[in-house]
Figure 1 (spheres, rainbow, N blue to C red):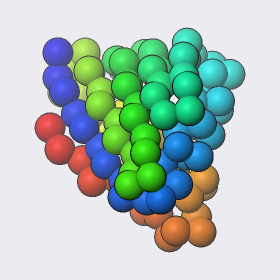
Figure 2: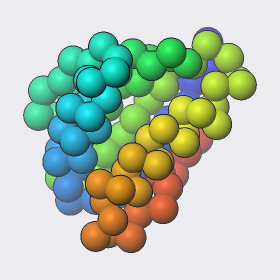
Figure 3: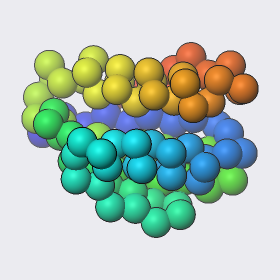
Figure 4: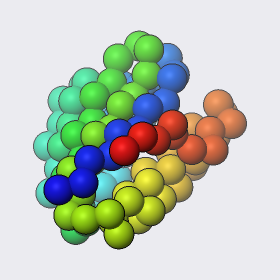
Length: 94
């Protein structure tokens, strides 16, 4: 397992969590509440947590080759959802 964590400081964390989970639920297994979610991507599982200070996403990936696809799937969707905040990418750490 390879672990990857992304953070995005925003007052709209719960809003973006809901948008991501509802969007991904059309293609993968997703469970979510207002402040927590789990997304089962082919490259691994993501656990999302949000509050008024931000959004955190923790991936448990199958291997290191899944790091870039994991980052890209989140960053590309948040770039569309959080465009008013000039979002470009989360702060990622392994």
